[in-house]
Amino acid sequence: MASIRRPHSPAKQHLLRHHHPFATSSPPSSPLRHSSTSSSPRTHHHHPHPFLFFTRRPLPRFAAFFLLGSFLGLLHFLSHLPHQTPHLRPATSSPAVIPRHQLPIVRLNNHDDDDDESNSKLLVVVTPTRARAAQAYYLSRLGHTLRLVHPPLLWLVVEAGNPTPEAAAALRGTTVMHRYVGCCDNLNASASDDALRFRPHQMNAALELLENHRIDAIVYFADEEGVYSLDLFKRLRQVRRFGTWPVPVISENRKDGVGVVLEGPVCKQNQVVGWHTSEHASKLRRFHVAMSGFAFNSTMLWDPRLRSHLAWNSIRHPDTAKQGFQATTTFVEQLVEDESQMEGIPADCSQIMNWHVPAGSENLAYPRGWRVAANLDVIIPLK
Image (tube, rainbow, N blue to C red; front, side, top):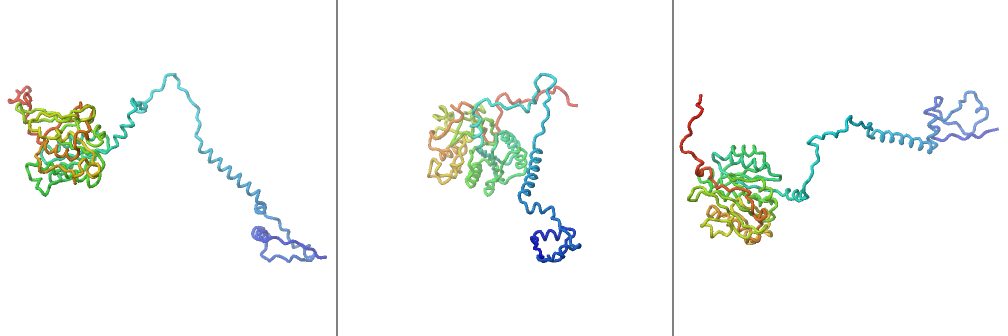
């Protein structure tokens, strides 16, 4: 009697052919065979491969890989835990000494946030210079003052003529962010003895540079011979449009020799109500202010909407005006119309923050009692 036998599936036949040691490459037998053939002693019984348990049962396979992934994830989590060490108490009950550099910083007032916002304003200091014996001395002195000012600060130095290697080396030695440019070379400024007459051209070159690059900053003209305090540069960043303050000016046009003239505003709080002056020839001046006694916002140079006089095409120092304070007041008249547009700093203008020394001050005479006509007697003889 013939028997019916169910053949294996193609996947099972493939596994049996490649993994079973007794598998052959012969084609599968016919499903209908005689009973004598099935009982032949040469016929080998095929055992299922162990991997068939995972291939035909998806649930155990999912459980096995889930447990393996959970175990690996737990190991990764445990490896990132901080190592717990037992707390050891000191032998004595005295408090630990904290190093000085690790002490917390305590703020004494609540105005530090406002100061940080005002300190972020760019400050541009314009300094006209000329080649002479004391040039490196004056530039180094002013540069070491500016290096103490809180950044950002740009020092714009304009040379009357071609830039010189000596001045460039002095500027690099101050480590202040600067730009050193030349001016008036077509006017033969380098070979001229009277280099002071090129100072308006030098200032105009700096103003043109700020206007072309549209630099938003507070502009201040600082002569290299002047003396400045750090409080001045701190208060300059508080100027919104145009700020001014009183400045003592050393003058040698007095009968008793060298004297001091106070130039600047008289303030009531921050409002300018008058002017300090003692020169009889300056009564016709509109604003009695020194060149180093005011600062202004550079946006007035390249934004016509912020100017006081819309009729001006450009704000520049007059080249034909008389040197001195007359040229200064002519320039200020292009920035503001009257005292109501000025800001007096500090409050009540009651503080001296810088001294203005005229150009060529190295030739000024000493005050009385500062110079000895005869040489001193030798106390210790030279050997």
